[in-house]
Amino acid sequence: LTANGNLQRIVSSFYDSPVTVVVNSCVERPRLCVSENAGVWDRSVDLKVYNKRFCRATSEITVHEPMCAELVRSGEVGLGQLFRYLDKLPTFDLLDAGRTESGGMWRLYELKSKELTCSIFEDFSPDVWSMMLDDHFNEHDNCF
Image 1 (cartoon, one colour):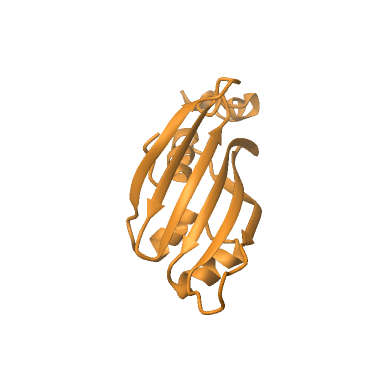
Image 2 (cartoon, rainbow, N blue to C red):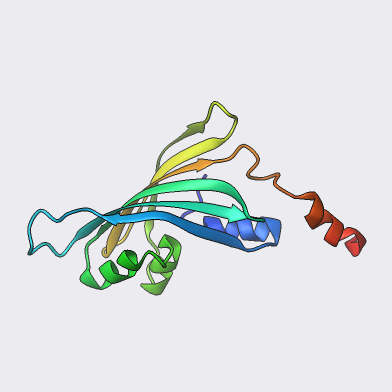
């Protein structure tokens, strides 16, 4: 619950397999005035391991620095990657968390630095820590 922008690395290490991020949408909100430096984006991504979704993350990203806007606008840079690119360790504030009716879990948190603020809602599948596929085990039967 307290992963602070490094969820991909944690899950990838747990499964010893790469995590992919599929950007479902990354939509910039209309600016209220032309002179605004900040931009706000609504973003939705799926995080997958073994090509199976284990989390959907819905974010509101507020950019306070113009140089970050292009990176967010491209939709190709993950939020954790963006903080690493900026060489910033964001503050992490877990706002709420709970269980879903299906047995999964969710959390709402904020990552913040001088350059950007991200309010993130993550909805985890019930089997987030037990998604090993039979084919994966068959590849490694002789490892133990």
